[in-house]
Length: 272
Ligand SMILES: O=C(O)CCC(=O)C(=O)O
Image (cartoon, rainbow, N blue to C red):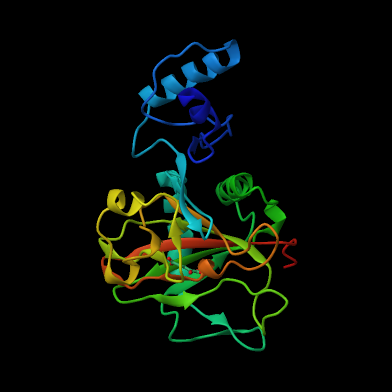
């Protein structure tokens, strides 16, 4: 019973940065019941993975939100990859915009960060990251928009918003199924990505294990920025209706600086 649950647990999986392995379910508590051969070898693999687990290096993923469906990727980027993105972005930052009524970018107080876009497939490092995002969202790389790199100084924020509308909405981007948001820095305080609209934790013990968060994130499903980690959430249910709980905010940075890199992934290929 216990081992069956372990083998089928879809919540936690690990991978390596350059190759994508078979899912290795990760759990710290099991003993060795009698098993058939294939289950036994998977158990041994799992045992090996567990011995080598390094909190600051081993990539693994956990579901954080039931609503919206959201997943936290620990150690998604290597230090070299995140430094590469910051190096490209730093000299090119401009005040971030939102999509206006005519589809053009407009400056708005709801979004006070600075940012820029890195062209898709810009170089081998960017391509490798985009391929990894494609593998983990299970959505084709052509459906990704350019990676955006954002820098938030103290007090800067992105107020509560949806990344996508559907056909029933007025102007603005549509059919962005998923957002994959990479964190390129730690933040001393604040800067969480929080879901303030009736979000529900996957497991009610997660917030306590996550530790203190700023006022803006309290009481909501939230992800705390950590350099190299990422959060993935889906703005639509599998039946293609919008998930109201996908409303999210980049909480104000209280202390430190936040670097983040969102990628929007749409239902269709990006035409740019
Ligand atoms: O910075 C964040 O945590 C959120 C960013 C965001 O909401 C966005 O770029 O759509």
